[in-house]
Image 1 (cartoon, rainbow, N blue to C red):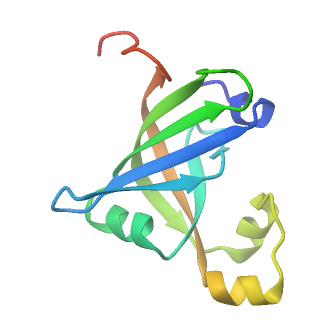
Image 2: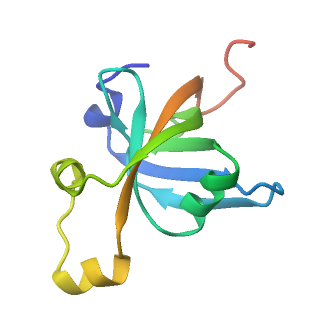
Length: 128
């Protein structure tokens, strides 16, 4: 995976997770943070997507590039670890929030994933 891709492209991202029974949820998510070890991370509030990952570590992320038609990427992911290191999370955050927003959002967790497979936005890509 190109470690600079998400820094070089703006767009809309959707993270899909499923609980242990297979019930699927999709939510809008910012671009992932890409780390030197090849993992990607999302800053998550304690909501349904994060709860699903506690019983099923697999997720899919779809990213549609802004203003480029149907250009983008799809990532198949597996959760590998989490961190609640507030200093690290604050250095990674791309947006700032008011104290009232912070209270409404609640505690944040940085959730790390391995990228199991990367596919183009359209088409099946190479066979596994």
